[in-house]
Length: 247
Ligand SMILES: Nc1ncnc2c1ncn2[C@@H]1O[C@H](COP(=O)(O)OP(=O)(O)OP(=O)(O)O)[C@@H](O)[C@H]1O
Image (cartoon, rainbow, N blue to C red; front, top):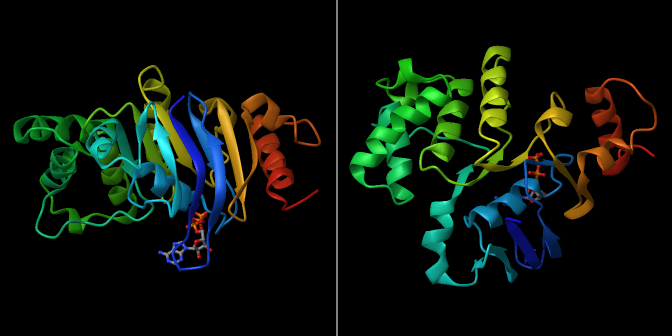
């Protein structure tokens, strides 16, 4: 049971909370975080990644708490984080950027350097290792972000729209990677991508307006689809109903 959000409130402007007194215990397995634009998905993930701190309440990860500064180092060591916007670090090659991310998460310099190549190979980017990261395309840069999230062998990996902008081949690489890592890594992924939703994820959370509208296993999620049909079509229908876009 990785994350427990306990009465979390947070916003970007004083007096305007995006999340208000939100409590949520995120289940194990691969979790898909769904919701319309502005629902609060990235905000929730930023709290779990500790890049933002709740105004009140706390997030707990297996006994570590965001309200305890002494826990944050261990927390970041356990959690891999890919934010929505991945930026190139000026002056660094792709491999150096990924190694730097590993070093920031607590790997030694040598381990980070070795692990960076392994992480780049996972996302099929080995051939770009020595290219300045500023020269990559948007989709390639997303794969650098995924490599940064995976470089230090975290056991919980948070990714904010990892498939956005990936071409079909690289989408397949990521899908297979997630399926292949399912024994040792738990993923919490904010996504608008309904492809393979039913196959890849065990749990679904639907947010809207800063609130959790649904949290349950995949079968219960799909049960909200009014008709039958292909799993990916049912996932879209269930999402429409649960997010309030329909029904
Ligand atoms: N840096 C910021 N400063 C001010 N407001 C912000 C900031 N980031 C997000 N918000 C606001 O917080 C609310 C939730 O945004 P958030 O990015 O968490 O939604 P989301 O569900 O991830 O949306 P999307 O699917 O578009 O990525 C929105 O109203 C948004 O305008």
